Length: 310
Image (tube, rainbow, N blue to C red; front, side, top):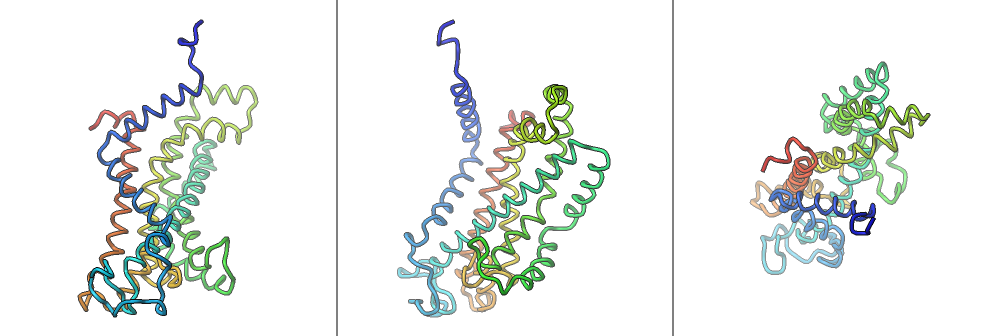
C-alpha cells in the first residue's frame, strides 16, 4: 500500500482541525467576536507598554473630570488620573477574574454533570436537586450574599495565590455559583453517551468508572463544554462588574466594574462626565458581546443540526 493512500494520524487530525477552523471563521459573528477578544487580550497582556504604569492620585497628571483631549484621549477621573490608563489596566483585572472564574465553573459543572448523567439513580436525583438550586437562584444574588461573608473571614490575610483577598474571593465565588448551566448541558450529553457501544465495550473489559468518564466520555463532551464556556465567561464578566460596582472590588487593582463604581461615587453622571462612565461600560459590553458571538459560532459549528444554518 503506497504512502499516498495511508494517512498518518497527525495528518488526519490536522485536516480535521483545518476544516473546523474554516467552518468557524466562515461565520461573520465569529470573525467579529474574535477580533474584539484579540484586541482586548492584547490590551490586558501589556498595559504598562501601551499606557505606562497604573496611575494613582499621587502620579495623576490631569485636572479633575477633564473631558477628552489630546493628552487624555478618554478624559480624566475625579483626581486627575487618565481614564484610558485606568481602562487598559482594568482590562487585565476584569479578564483575569472572568477567565479564572470560568475555569472553576467548568470544572465543577463538568464534574457534577458527568457524574450525575453517568451513574443515574439517587446520585442523579440529589446532584440535580443541588443543580436546580444554583440554576434557579441567580448567581449574582448568591455571589452578593456570600462574597462579604468570605471577605470578612479572610480580610486580614495577605495575597492568596498571587491575588489580593478581595479579588481571590470574587474569582472563587463567581466560579462556585455559576456552574449549574454547564452541569445541565454536560448531564444531558452524558445520558446519551453512556448508552453508546464504546462505553459498553469499556465496561466489558473491566475499565473503571473513573477511566470511562475521563478517557471515553470527557473527550466527547469537549465540544459542548467549549461552545458554552464562552457564554460562561460573558456571564462572569457581568457578575464581576456588578459586584465591583457595588463596592466589593479592590480599588488598588481596579477592574472595569470598580471604575464604574468610582465614577458613580464621583457623580460622573450628574456632572456630565460621560467619558468616565462610558469607557469602562463600553468595554464590558464589547467584550461580553465578543464572547457571546464566539460561543454562538462554536455552537453552530459543533452542532450538526445548526451547522447548515447560515
